[in-house]
Length: 192
Image 1 (cartoon, rainbow, N blue to C red):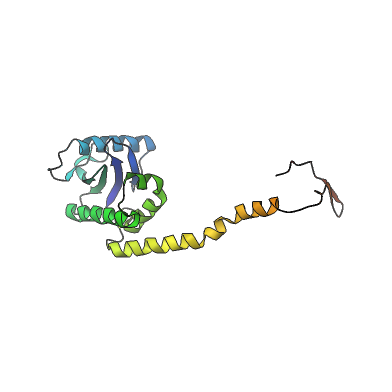
Image 2 (image 1 turned 180 degrees about the vertical axis):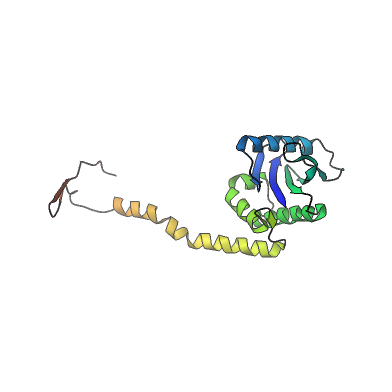
């Protein structure tokens, strides 16, 4: 089972953190720091598997990672997961990001965090692998994008309503409103 997915840059700044096992926030930060120190000090020509740090479970867990340009993609898994399978999963995740963002970079992960999380949820949910077919993942992301665009009209409704109210030509703003036995005095309002 996947216990955590961490993406951080060459300086150790986290760009995506997803834990599938509960850890307090300060413990999560310590795990990210420890994982960065374990992974970043390794040469590029050594194996991409290593034992988990002392904070995340030691030898019971494995860190499987890939280093692409300025980003480290690290999956922390238990002993039931295949190292090569997870390495392939990282490749699928990165290639999917690359397709969705057209040459993904660190800024895409920063400014489109919601989309990155959606893509990750298409691949892994609750620590279990859901989908490894990149074309299926991209198709689901495109469906989500189309849905967001179709709802764009609804999200713009409040702005259109404010604009309509501003453009209303009222000869005079009512000062007293009488509804049955209720008398409401409207305070003086400044014009929009």
